[in-house]
Length: 226
Image 1: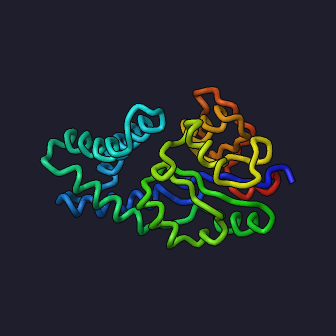
Image 2: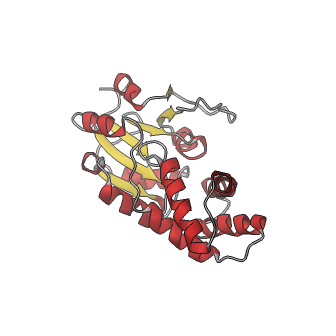
């Protein structure tokens, strides 16, 4: 067995975050009196993605960026709405969404018979715990390491130190990081000296030139790797 320990990212790796985000944004629009449209959602996503990239790079705290994304969004629209209330509505809606990515349940169920599976995530703790409580994949995961609870986030060494300190038997040689994010999952694996598998169903480029040991577009491809 090449990699008995598997460290899975959550959003857009095991969970369909894009679907959940559309639903949650719709609930957020209702809370501030906006009518949901795809164009409006796309405009919000630009600010959301920029802010989470700031967090991944260690340039801002999570408490700051979850409000800043709405501050920027509302400023662009020129409306007077409360970012804190919008964020509260969005997180509450997200915590109820445990939509699986294609084949994630099958893959986790099968791999759990022979491997040890863990979740590594920078998501907001209340959201992640809420989703996990509803998720079909929950029985197949031994533990979820959430950055808020770890006191550090991907891709920092401190985060992976925390993860490794809580898994008996794991080493840099016997585990594989699986995730869709170059800036957190793949960067973190590179910096910590771990093998990594980039889940890239959209065939995105790798502009950062990061080491990618494996690249897959379908989670079932993991069966041949691990």
